[in-house]
Image (tube, rainbow, N blue to C red; front, side, top):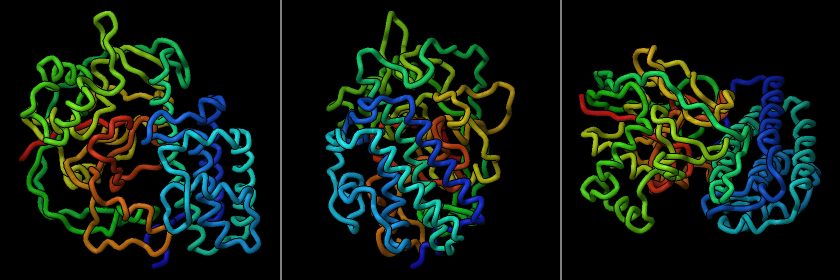
Length: 425
């Protein structure tokens, strides 16, 4: 199966060239505040060093585009394929994921030279107006890099949270806490029925977003806004982390094994809840969306509330006609923003936090992974993960769609993940 049957592009040659440079420059801007030490350390097996993110996204273009399609291409360093491959079994051996922090050499400066080398090769290739298959692989590489831009920030946040000094990634100093009124929790009714789900328009989408298909959705109701820090504090005060009946079995085992008693990064200081942010250690804003919670925590909160999490089909049915606007990376806020008290209907559908759904990440009807290494991109992970929707405050603008399916295991907490309540109609 050709890439063009899955990763369709609507970009012309000039637009693709501009998009490529924009993405590559954004990654380097995100890495600019970091020292070589910041960019090298790995804080846990699920996270990766910033230096690795900058190199891996470069390796992707080299391995998927330059090596196959540029005769006589000279790689920057043959050993980089082992160091910076992620999980592509068909492309050879690689450094084990939990040991990426051991890659103290090459230095960050050499990784930036590697990026320049590969960018030069891609520039030359893109100036030849490459065929559709190559263009689609380049655009896939750009969207892949945007995913790693978000991961670079969430991984740096986790790393800095382990430092007793609680360093800020950007703009250290106190952050204002919102004083506006919180819109009351309300629910919008949806009739359900047979709905079209999945990417069906012109332009890029990941293979896991299709094929577009029909799904039966029963009548449901969706909350107008995301669950807040203040509401989560009420859950904690009511013993939410101590009541086993609220929890799925695997989630309760995590509570006991890891001592969960609050969202990741929350700490109490002088009787007030604080949290680690990309702008340093800050007081928690009670009316901002809660974040850094696992699927198991989100599900337990929904049960405690007498509600449930939406399915991904309910979420997409509600989101399809909503403009893709929100608090993304380009706002430079780098943390979730409270809902507006002056806006009616559904808010915060896009941006702020990724919203856990109760849906397992599994293939849509008629899904087939593409042959070869590209087929390892999503299809091999369709087991043991849950779908999140909507993007977050560190998702690059233009990267999200109503059909976009993010996915993580149920215990994952270090992403900007939160929840929206739902109930049967």
